[in-house]
Amino acid sequence: MKKTTALISCAMLALATMAYANPVPHSPLPVPRIIFDTDMITDFDDVGALACLHALADAGECEILATISSTRGNASVGAIEVINHYYGRPDLPVGSPKGMGVMGDRAGAKEKVCPSAPLGEKKGNDGGHYKYRKLLADYPGWYRHADADDAPDANETYRRVLAAQPDKSVVICSVGFTTNMRRLLETKPDAISPLDGKALVAKKVKVWVAMACQYPFGQEYNAKWDHESSRIAFANWPTPIVFSDAKYGRDCFAGRAVAEMEGQRNPVKDVFAGNIPSREEIRKDSAKWLRRCYGMGGRSAWDETAVLVAVRGIDPYFNFERGTFRMVGNKGDNEWAPDAENGPHIRITEKVSKFEVARVIDELMTRKPKHGCK
Ligand SMILES: [Ca+2]
Image 1 (cartoon, rainbow, N blue to C red):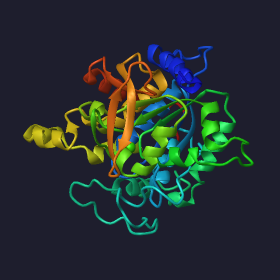
Image 2: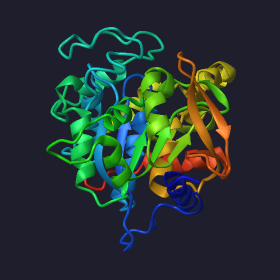
Image 3: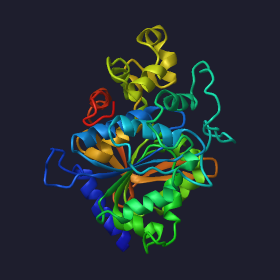
Image 4: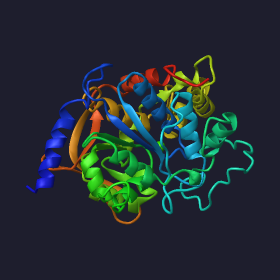
């Protein structure tokens, strides 16, 4: 067994058999230090995921080091900043990828969104970027970067944040495209660190928790739209990767609770209230809404499950299988190959019912910010 394989095997065992840290507030054990990487481009489980992350940080269960967009030329960074502001963390480092990856108002768009373009009307069952541009219109002064292209290069933010952390202490939680992880691996030594990207990740990162890929095979949104980055990142990442795959999260519905909250200005509530169908609509045609990934509980909670794993570990809510997720062909397909002995990846499987997992997510999403900005 090669040394690197042996090291990953030891880390796997630790990850699989215990939570990353004692979740009791004021515990002397270190809490997970999280870099959150999100697309914030069309779907909105990203908003739920970032809300859960802030609620867990409020409870002392994790520390948020940075919140980075995996898309560019749009309102993604501004939307992240609106939510950070709501939770009283307006100064968290941000970043966006430069020169490659998904851009504009939806995956496959050819042009960036001009930040000064009129918001316009929401069209029908909007699946696009409108919801994020509307956040910027509704919460002026709550963000710094209306155009993600004006944010720092994600590579610089990653390298700066990682270099300042204790070894093997950082959990990267990605709930969007894999562009930033690929770009980070390809960075060269610089004034921030004498290590190249792969060496820096190997030294500082404990685990990458990724919402990506489809079990047992298929084309999954986060993995396929920049599939060359997915191929490079998954094949070369030097730490364990834990996947919350698309199939797991699809029938775990959360968000109606926050959508129906009373009270203060709340961008998380606004996004969910504005984008999930009413109870009446679901009752009328539940099969149609299920095909569109909505249930009575809300929206499929793909991204929120990744945050639960990143902060609380696998053990409290999930079982797991060890193996390899890899990209195949050149059209964005992926496949899972089980390998209980040497697989560098873990995919989560059901342990606690998905209904119960969704209620944990709802409880986190509906918590009031501890130090929120009004
Ligand atoms: Ca996402």
